Image (cartoon, rainbow, N blue to C red; front, side, top):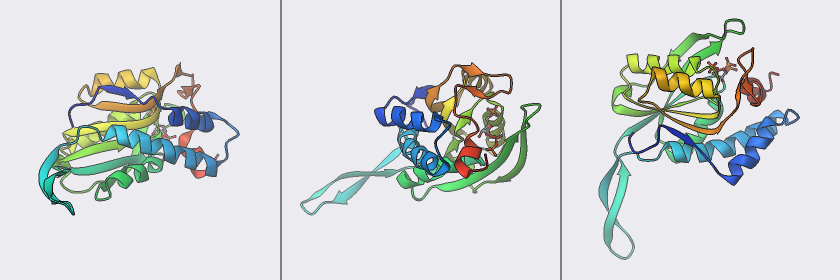
Length: 211
Ligand code: PRP
């Protein structure tokens, strides 16, 4: 996937409005899920920019003309669990996308990512891979996930997230300069617990109602 900036910060009124709903600590989990779904669609739209196309013929009711179809397979890889909240937005644009899962949680004391599960589709090495997770905090989970995908042969990888910390962007760019990041916001910093400030709390807990 070429022709996209190293970091895209999506600037859109609907995103700004929905991010505010997501940040609000009083937002209930059904409303949180709905706002996340709306933002995810806009993020997915930007994340799929520049995909390779193949020219094909198409017959309109009037005459033959040029058309296009995607010239690559798309694999969406969700970092469990919170990444699940972003997958449907991508498959709305690319219904034939295959979906992989990486189980990764961040140890609450060390803040280091711990991997506990993985299931990826075949042929990832010839696909365009969109790795999704709402939060890029220290960047450990995203960076380890990208390393894992590269070990499995993936070459074209983008990372789509909702909120990033500058620390996470720096880490991912240093570890994997070839990865483009698409995000709705870059927040101020991390706190002592490595939570994004101001952020929105724990995305997984808020999506799934496990607060
Ligand atoms: C959160 C988030 C990312 C990770 C970000 O997951 O969804 O996966 O932390 O932090 P990092 O950039 O410092 O690695 P969490 O560990 O809360 O797991 P969950 O998705 O199961 O809630």
